[in-house]
Image 1: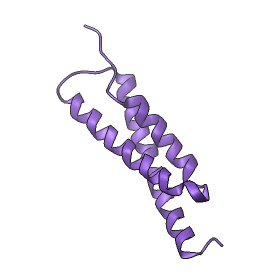
Image 2: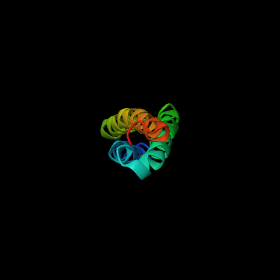
Image 3: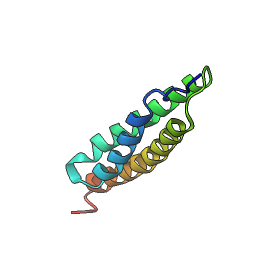
Length: 90
């Protein structure tokens, strides 16, 4: 029996990484926050599917790394959004 790939694990990784990169661009901190929140949601969706079946360890690691990147990206995007909105970075 071959182990499949965890659903949306690659999307979680890409969205998580992009959320960090976009968090530091002035006009893109809100889309970065949205991408981070989506990546976190995708991770939990994949984890719910993991309970019902077995998937390959590489895709599980990819999803976890994407989740961690999305958490960092969401925090950075939210911080930058608040800093730009308050005028602290002008």
